[in-house]
Length: 201
Image (cartoon, rainbow, N blue to C red; front, side):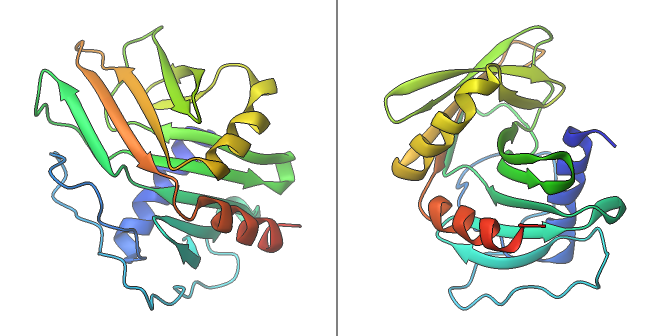
């Protein structure tokens, strides 16, 4: 299973299983009728059977949920958030929900890989940008996902995300719609610290 499909499936599982994702994207139109449950301050981690691919919420930190899952028996840990604001040009274009992930896959020796599932098919061959901490990072696109183009910059980008208030992702759909999604980074640093403790093996 590709990383994009796995993350999309895990995000869908989070919604279906009712694990808490903050309902922050006010006014974001969506083709999907499913709405995530609003996070409660006292949200308890969801229980999942050992070896299950269903994600387990291990902590909610501000706007970021920290999750673990075991797809195909391999541990995956990820922080997940929805945008705090989303804009399209032309305005009010329909799209699926967007999600930002920072994932760790110990079996593949992947640590803190940043990706965004943008909620629509991106224009083939286009690039996106992720702006954080006064810097803009080029992101390559595939399907409905974006990843950093220069992997050597990823650690620096994650450090900037730990310190900044928000990150903005810009993209262009296959139909030419321009989108701007802003993600609050409140709680990301704590979520990543929790995942680092829980995802050592």
